[in-house]
Structure formats: C-alpha cells, structure tokens
Length: 373
View 1 (cartoon, rainbow, N blue to C red):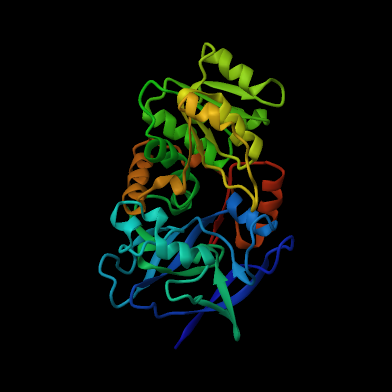
View 2 (cartoon, rainbow, N blue to C red):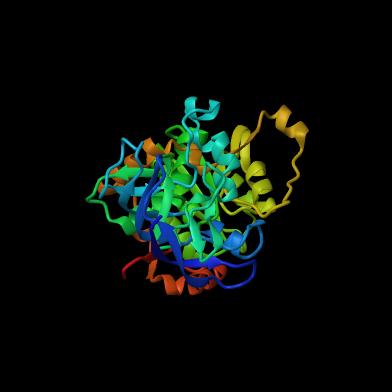
C-alpha cells in the first residue's frame, strides 16, 4: 500500500501544545471512503475541550473537525462523489442503515456513536500513522491535517463557486447554530428568542432566529465586543450579564412573560439553568453548548410539569448534513447567511496553538487554518 505524507497538528495529551508532525496516510481509499485534500479548517471550541482535558481524548490524535476541501480519490463503491468535487466534512458520518439514519436523524447514527465518536472508522481502525504507531482522527475527521480520509457519507458535496475557507465553518458552528433554531426547536415567525453566548455557535443561533422570522432576538454575553457582533448577525437587544441581571432584564424586555425560546450556546451549568428560568410557560430551552465531562444541572421538576416548560438538547443542529450543508451554502451565496464576518483570523497550521490561546482569552469568532497559505 502506497502512502502520502500529511503535515498535521497532533494532540499528544491534555494541557500540552499540539505538535506539528509529518504523518502518513494511504492514497487508496477503502471501498466506501474518500480521500480529501483539505483547503481550510476552523478552530472550534470543541477542539479546545479535548486539548484542555475537559473531555477524555486518546493520544496521539489529529484534532480538528470543521473542514472543507477537494476530493482527491474515491473508493470503489462510492457512486455519489467524484474526484475534484468540493466537499464539507461532517463529524457524524452516517451508516444510512440504522433506525436513526433511516428515520431522518443521521446525527444520532448508532454506528457513528460507536466508532466516529471514538475517533476511529466504521471498521474500528484509524487511517493515519506515525511510522509504526497508529494515529486517530478527531471524530473520524482530523481536519488539522493537510489530507483526511473520511467515510463517503462524511463528505458532503457543495457548489464549486463557494469559498472553502467560509464553507469549512458550515461543517460545525454554522450548522449547529442555525439548525438548533430551524430543525431542533422549530422556531416560528414572530417568536421571542434568547441566545446566551455570542461565540461561533451562538452567533449562528442568532442567524437562525433571524432566518426563522423571530420578532425579538435577545443576546447575552459578558463581552461588549461580542454583543456588538450579536447585533451584526441580527440581534434586536443585547444584555451584558456581567453588568445587569440576566433574568430580570429578559422579563423586562418581554413584559414579564419570558421568552418563547432560549438557547444556551456556551456549555456551562448556570447558563443552562438560566435559559430554563428565562422561558415562559410552555416555552422551550435548548442546550446547544457542549459541557465538560461530568457536568450536571439542577432544575425544579414541579415547575417543568406545572408550567409545561421544555428542556431539550440539540446535537449538530439536528441536521441532515447532505441537505443542510448545501442549503446553507446557497443561502450564503445569496447574501442571506453571513459567513464572512465569522472568519476573524486566517492562519497557517503552524499558528494553531496561538489560535487556541486567543480562544481562551475570548477573542475573535473563528480562526481558520488555510492549507497552502
């Protein structure tokens, strides 16, 4: 089997910087796999959870899961992708056979849960190596590398006139945020919406609420800079929850009623609880943010039943990636979704550790690694 070299950022253990190494990958995809030459990868907070030890993550492993690129080779049984197709990578490959996939919920794919979520392929093996040592790929993607082998169902074809640096963000933050509104919650026109957290996912929840026709979109954060970004993406009201009481202000803005929908986009127990408190009777709070391992929340079950409040989760925006990715790209190309403003820094692979340092400081929205830059 012949291989090609892959320059990649390798996770070697929690609280250690990523190491830039030259790995190897086969140039011959398996029957239902494709080899993708990455053009760009977003640097996402989920990668930081792994890097900082919030999630138990094996090493060595190539981080990154928000990528886009060009198909370099296809497996013998792949019929819906061709060499030179432009694709966005999905971190939930679907087996297209389990009850979740066939019922239209590929983000809950049973096989992906057992394999990709353990950072291996459907056969239980990785595709990268460092000499004799196997190297896993984060969520079976590993977009912090120049090339990625992925299941064919994880490579979603898009139009070729869309810029791949922006398209990469659709692979996680954009779809997660917009989908939480349109797919998971089903926000109706004229609704009132609260979004807690103005990071990459939260700002796309704001975009989703705008697309859904919400009449009032309230955003909360502790950074005035990020609150202004919230306005840019469609917020009608902003709350600096470090300066004023979040719940009191939400009630004031909604005539004491509470919001119809609240979205938590940070991943902290007290903000999840605050979103639940902020919704009206019969309202819906949606947990979108990813929490550290072992985090628990506390809510009053009597209030849940008495007031018919709903607390639900949203994974990957409840997306059907093969449908939602191209649709979001079309909306972007038509000027209805803003991807350009999300890219606040363009870097090379060598700058990835600096990008995480900036993320820890709460700066910017998305650093994007551009390969070949």
